[in-house]
Amino acid sequence: MTIYNFSAGPAVLPKEVLKKAQAEFLDYANSGMSVMELSHRSKEFDAIIKDAEVLLRELMEIPNNYKVLFLQGGASTQFSMIPLNLAKGGKAYYIVAGSWGKKAYTEAVKLSKTIPFEPILLASSESSVYDHIPVIPTEDIDPSASYVHLTTNNTIEGTAIYQLPDTNGVPIVADMSSNILAARYRVADFGMIYAGAQKNIGPAGVTIVIIREDLLNEDPVLSSMLDYRIQSENHSLYNTPPTYGIYIAKLVFEHVKRLGGVDEMERLNRIKSGLLYDFIEQSDFYTSPVKKPQDRSLANIPFVSPSEELDAKFNKEADAAGFKNIKGHRSVGGMRASLYNAFPLEGVEALIEFMKKFEEENK
Image (cartoon, rainbow, N blue to C red; front, side):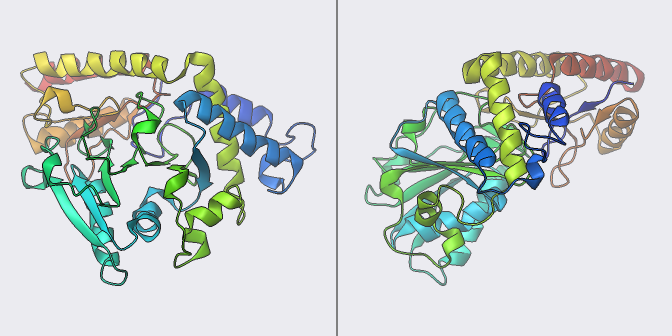
């Protein structure tokens, strides 16, 4: 039985990458050691992390005045690091279009009770269970504010922001965890981008931070580990980094480059997601909770059947048929197909055939 992994993260990785990692597992570059055994100060790992940065810069067309960091703690640690480093006693705006944006805002509110800055909820679609991207009142943005935070792709709810708002010159800080390398964004339009690796880049444990040099903090923050300037000056080696995760990320970057880069990934992702969205639209059985087609995510596609009982039956039968991790997030229920870069087209086609059969049997 063929297994298709629809997990939202940790997610499917390219088989070519896994095979290369397997071949090099016991002896990397004739060192006699696994990458997991290499010192992070060794010449072998130095080449790995430098190559990873060069490749990511090429793929995302990152300008020279941006620093690239490979950190730990996941995107959730960035919820605290961002205000600690960037708020500078000023205003910080938050666009909350999904559960992760809400968590980022909630963490900022918590921090504002102990450090001097003002987190402001600029726009939210929480009242309608995040079924759309809210209208963003750009006229309300104070041009002297520290940043505007948004999430480019909402993993749980299946929405995405493709057209960035006009922020009156205030730097945009973006959580790009679930569609980095999957859709083309212009890095120069952001002050900072961050992303957990476990969707499109590699295993859990690595967090990518891309930050414009002028936004690096002037004053030390609460902890050296949470200080962007210290991490930058130490080239992501202030402490022992997640060496194996960075190695896998480098292999994934090489793989994406071989396939044609980010633009090709987006083209393929639009084909994959388009097939599933088109099928859901023409169906009288399945529906999408996303209110507006222009807000649809390329990466995460939630859908439901006519009842919660049928949803539960679908998930049980899908799992038995080899469609793993397709159950929707516990906060919203239903089903969710996560179609990241490494997810194959034939997996989407197989899912649609299964959905057709399930509909015929349960309509």
